[in-house]
Amino acid sequence: MYILIYIMNKNTKAISPKKCFRKKCKNSSISLIKSHPKELSKLECIDSINFTNNIIMEEHGKELYKTNDFYKSLANLMTNTDFKNILDNFWNNDLEIKSFIMYIQLYQYINTKFPDISEYKKIHMIKMLIDNKNTREIICRDFSNKFILDNVEKKNKLLY
Image (cartoon, rainbow, N blue to C red; front, side, top):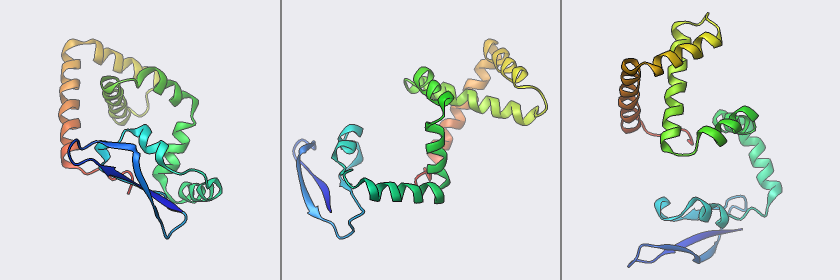
């Protein structure tokens, strides 16, 4: 098994998929790309990984699914038809993503405060709060403050 290591041009700090070399890797189930994450596009990273050993990947994926709640939830979510519809229609740029997260948090807040009311009443409450200029301003301000502070103060632990 080989790992791909990208060579960075010191002058331009650019990384090209063509400028890479392979290095023998002791563990045959590992495939890595070494570079600064900001220098590679998502597609370059994906295209550069050797996915030829599908049997090992399948086994490791099954084990990961069984032992890691985050990856299990991710796989289940990404195969859910309703969520795919959300991604296709309301998840196209940063503003839409942040807005959708704000709606989710608002829904969760209402659900916590009023757990016994119907889903229809909850979504109607959200619409009323967002349609009102004053409450929308408060909700957006509070979300922005919380969103920024949470991202600055907490480290991302999803993948660990």
